[in-house]
Image (tube, rainbow, N blue to C red; front, side, top):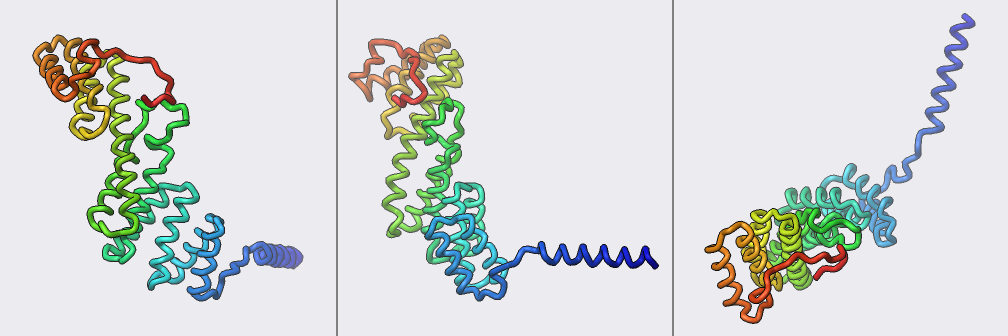
Length: 263
């Protein structure tokens, strides 16, 4: 009997502890309107973690309707501002799949471009000390695709002008990245890889300032490989397009420059 009484007391004590330590949900019973406007207020105040919590609560309790749709868009933006690009992109892609004809789809394309454009792991992370030849330009390419889709599908969107400007920056950055890698390979005497990268610049980024040096790299690369015909062909193209190029009188040479010097 004594053992039974002790067991009952312990059980009651544990139950009391679990009751007193259970976190209180202050949003219990809130209507969808209050949840949304509280989340929006937190977002506008830059309290992104709290706004994310409230938007997720709204989605869980009220998964349908205009507040749920707006909450999903705001949630993607909140993740972006909280520097959580993977979560932001996941939220954007989910929204696009659920609402392919939504009137604010142009904004979601713009936001998708911004998330990738400002991704610190991309080619615009210029002040990290990382060798640019080692960077993956995937984020920059994804940003370009999102912006180009926005401009193509929604030419009159208020976001199209900035998207077009950023596309120009991206083209220049991607071309610079390809050229830097070509230089990197030339310095290591990986001539075939260097030529391939230089050809990529000429093919994809023909409007940029990096074509001249890319042709010069091809001339030097083919010369090092003993491919005289291809060398002469590349040099003729260089002379035709850049008759005053210094590379017509002096061969391309690798330059040792600091990682932070772009040109």
